Length: 277
Image 1 (cartoon, helix red, strand yellow):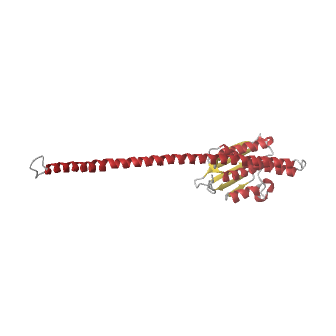
Image 2 (cartoon, rainbow, N blue to C red):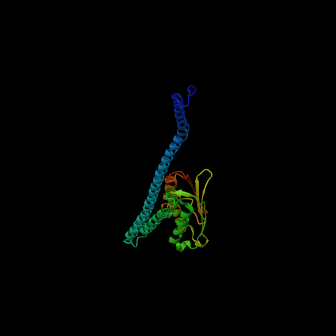
Image 3 (cartoon, rainbow, N blue to C red):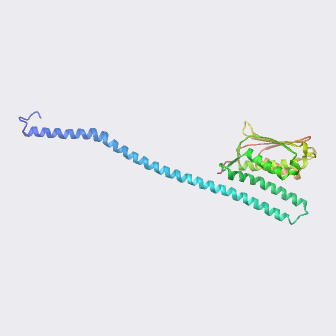
């Protein structure tokens, strides 16, 4: 551009051509490289994100559907287990009808029926609950006490029940043993503790200690157990079952005091089992 003689010569034309090419290169370096390409890259990333979000939503729907199906299957399992236990109970009653005059068989059938129902109540609560692994201990104990009182209403209608149960949720593995122990304790009190049921009081307390252990205490104001007897050997009072469940299954510590009144204490850990649902 500095050596041309006229605006119409070759050097002037060549200089303007170079200037047009340089403007194109400047445009390409500034706009296309700095603006257009990053914008295209951003659009590509957005499309990838949209695709991943869509896949995530699809996986989420499949996961929720799988959870719903699992919940339905587990509830159906609890329902079928409950029905199976009721069927077993009915079959036991039918078999017992063949021995109408045998009081020992009647007592055995009665106790077996009550133990089956104690377990059945847990499955019923789990079937109706949103949580398929844990149940409210207070709700379970209250339902169980109601069932026991109805079963023994000829005596229990004059008995007072005092309960203080901390509302906590426990696994089936904890609830069933506690329910079976309570069944034995209440049944024994109703049957043996009160010569005069009108003054009978049963006290049930369950709460969690600072250490994390659960403390279960039961007492009645009845006649108590004779000091000359070892509670572990009282088969008729179901103490072997209580000790077997409390110390064997729950790995707890049992303390029993009697005379003039009966007092039972069981302390056990709450983390013995883990959720499987």
